[in-house]
Amino acid sequence: MSKPVEIEEAKFDESVLKAETPVLVDFWAPWCGPCRMVSPVVEELAEEYDGKVEFFKVNVDNAPRIASQYGIMSIPTLMLFKEGKPVDTVIGFRPKEELKKSLDTAL
Image (cartoon, rainbow, N blue to C red; front, side, top):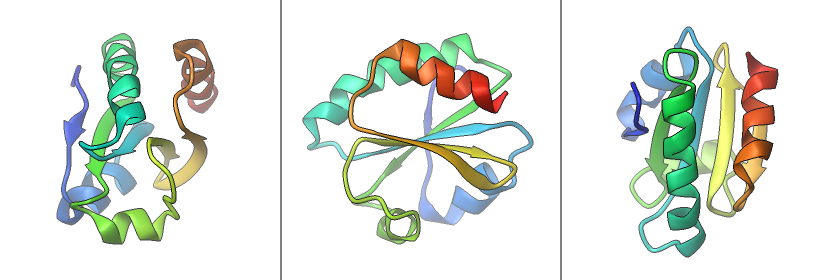
């Protein structure tokens, strides 16, 4: 997978929590300006980490249960999961290099 895939609440457990590789989830909404700024960075990372990390997007407006379950209070929030558990969270726009450090640590 080389581009983040949008997933619905019903697919979250199977796609994220049961994944064999680390997973980066981009919690976002279409009306969020900073979300649109971070999206191309996440897409670049998806290309660079293809085969090593899976990338998904969760629209918090369409998945309020998941957003609430993980305490998403601000977007964009990037949450890194490993073995079904959140291991790192980045809130707001961050430089690509900072996000790469988080991914490299999980690998």
